[in-house]
Image 1 (cartoon, rainbow, N blue to C red):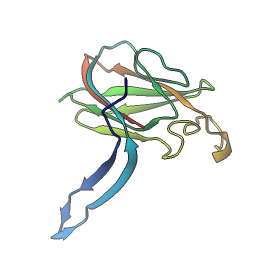
Image 2: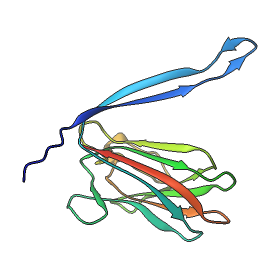
Image 3: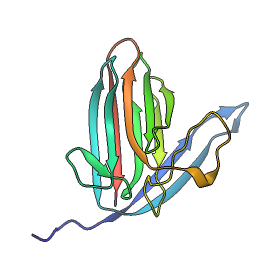
Image 4: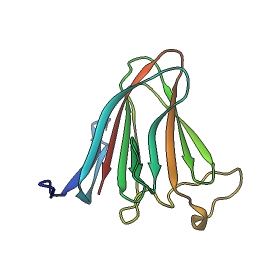
Length: 156
């Protein structure tokens, strides 16, 4: 069966709007990610125990994204009270933990040529751009009660 879906360019626009003392202090940044052919957008209820929200690999598997194809990930906390912890893990088992407060979003940009391959590193010492490893998973854990996250993944 031949696909009837053709890839398209995705435009991402980030805008800050702030006026202080009558002067606009915000800004806008836009960029284009070419040839997006797959989008996964879902709402996930995250409990107060850690769960996987994104899995990445080099092989096709149920619920797993191909790491070289993923160009953009956005995670938005849809709760109006509680934060959630996001844990990013690479192939070397290095982890980075980030707090995503209620109502906020986090964007993980893949490499435009290589997806999330060689894009993440964490250690207690200095980091070299030559030591980045592949992102392999994103997990989440809610603070004091379950939190709804919107997860958006765009792939070529």
